[in-house]
Length: 329
Image (tube, rainbow, N blue to C red; front, side, top):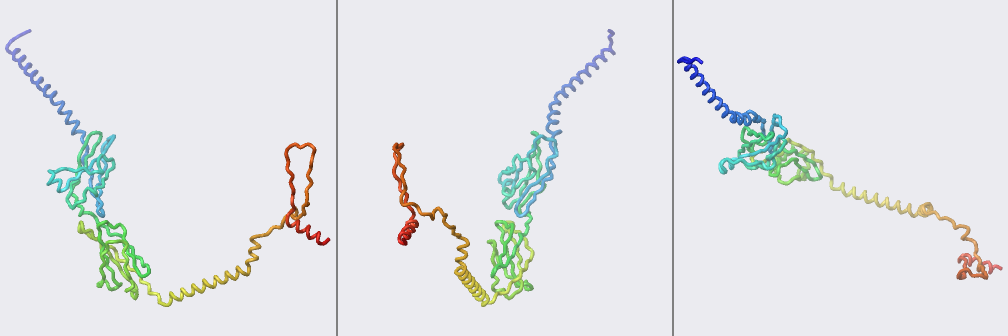
């Protein structure tokens, strides 16, 4: 091999390159575990957009979201909430929603959990084959944001009373009922209803043709109210005082007449009806023949078994017939 200053310089440069390559290979080996960790935990992370929203109607709060768009064998969700008390007094603690842990459906009833007048943050943890992700409700929720629907009002006239009833009434809801004669709404009377159904007397309004009703439902806990549609009913006229006694008297006379007719019919046609229903059959001829006064007893010289003599007596009717025949002769 030839040697010289030029060749030694080339050989030392090649050796330096080898050292650099060796350092690079060591660096790559050290980066491989980190790359694997990042690949497992970040490249396969779950989508966090679930389109979360809260539907609250008549103080019933339902959290809904879109199903997770990922290829998973098993998917489940867990819901947590955080109110102002948990945020400021419990150092930002999140509370598990009791009925919404490890569930498979994409909705959760939070009515019992969000029961105070506070601003709540809500988040959802999604699990997909061991991988998890978090998604949060875009804005805080307060039960004052609920949509209050007016209950359905039903008005019915029953004699001297008008019954007013409501459907889908909340437990803490108060009904303010306004009542007025049609065309005189400015002088409406106000009735506060807490017990259902409510009975309104119309004795003082008999001369009026129609009465109108309108209800306003109030939930004091959230200071929110809603009103029903106006309903008007016809007030029947009062029946005269002498009409009822006359109708009772006519009913009594008709009842007495019917009873008399039935009694006469029973006395007049009773025997025919009895004979038709209870038909009497004649006695058979065998029972009408006369029986002998004595009966011959058959005796044999050889007694096969102990026997007792038996005397047959004729019937009483036969005896009377025999006596009458002797008297004639």
